[in-house]
Length: 220
Image 1 (cartoon, rainbow, N blue to C red):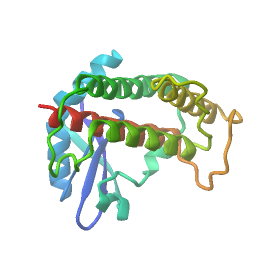
Image 2 (image 1 turned 45 degrees about the vertical axis):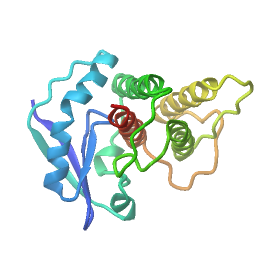
Image 3 (image 1 turned 90 degrees about the vertical axis):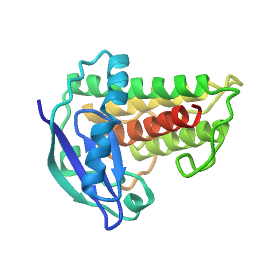
């Protein structure tokens, strides 16, 4: 079965993202390099799908939409939503996408836990962040992504370092469900151009998996 792919192309960088598989998104200097990178990461993404208990049988990549990238693309982020990201979501489809997003979160948590006490290699691949800073960066990004859905992040009310992340992710899923169903958000904020649920899931899963795989690569 063909894998539908969005290509986001800027003058010096491109991203290829699999529509039905949030987090399976890779970049390259050219569209062809991005597609090759996406294909090469299929085995790593298969482990994420297995964690989500979703059957994963990647086939030939098929570009179904090409969007013009911007400064974010050049910086290294799949930062442009596609027309296909605006399609309505059925409840069952959202449940499937959320299960893959949650598996991406769990993959990151497992990678971070396994790297505790390990000195991460430094260099171009990781940008030099240590483990604590990577975890903090991911947390900050997820706060921003929740805001892009139109919701405020929940306040942390204890000293358990894992609890704020759990609360944040729970709020993200709740916001996705509310937006899909057209319900008012429980903790709204003034977001001028909120993301669609599809793009929010795709962006969040890409970011957390990119750093999970970074940790795995730099810890070995």
